[in-house]
Amino acid sequence: MKRVVSGIRSTGKLHLGNYFGALKNFVTMQHDEECFFFIADYHSLTTHPDPKALHTNVKNILSEYLAAGIDPNVATVYIQSDVPQVTELSLLLSMHAYIGELERTASFKDKVRKNPENVNAGLLTYPVLMAADILLHRADYVPVGKDQEQHLELTRRFARRFNQIYGVEYFPESVPYNFGKALVKIPGLDGNGKMGKSEGNGIYLSDPDDVIRKKVMKAVTDSGPTEPNSPMSEPIANIFTIMDAVSAADTIEYFKSKYASCEIRYGDLKKQLAEDIIKAVAPVREKIEDIKSNDKYLHEVTMEGAERARKSADQTLKDVREIMGIYHF
Image (cartoon, rainbow, N blue to C red):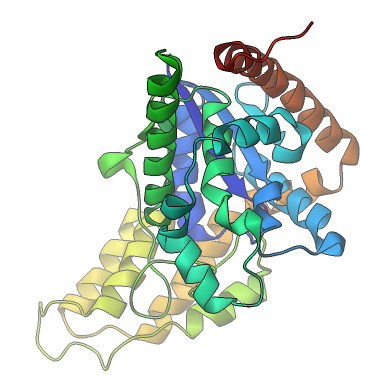
């Protein structure tokens, strides 16, 4: 059984792209591998240092992931700040992380360009903390998005450098967890690209029914097919991709046949899609509200998860300290 570590952003909300994409695979993966899922609240402080919102954001996203199927009885689910060993490992790894390589990361340069007044040390050392998150549990695999691939490569570099400097084979060089064809990519409602928070084109699991309907009815379409069996434009193909995830096979076939015969009415298509989305997310949304209102349950989940994570982290820190020559008198 391999070890898998995945960080969950403590800002934002789960949208259909998350739910039908990587998260569905996480739910399956947790039964096949030893998984560590953590809410990355330290990371959010580099750009969202709002003490009034931090705890609420963590609570919301944790509730959503639990409602969507992450099982704390199977996987280790914890809050990053509940495992202080990660900060010590980050400090130790930073002794062999070089300023130049950190300054060259694409995400750092992008954040500096967008927020020149908030270029903090935490932003610069973000990849070191991410490496500590991963190496703390000596992960074999890490599910990462395109924007995090460079950070994972730095993690591999830090692990390799540590091993070379101290003449050990301690840290594994974690590799991306590739879901292959099993990873469903849900497009946005704006006619192109993927669904996401930053794109402003997402439908969230916590959205009320009327909000879902309004969003879907505003989805970009075209002027309609002009010839039988004509190819679909990207906006229409995107709508059918979302429909593939939430609608019944006969419903999809009905609207595809209407498109092929040039009889399709996009208003009817979007109305049907909206109702199918509402039906698909309703059970999860109900669970989100139940879990979010159960502080006792959330406390138990995070405390038990932190205890298991700290046990793994303690062993790593003990080993790393000895390898680096740090001993107690």
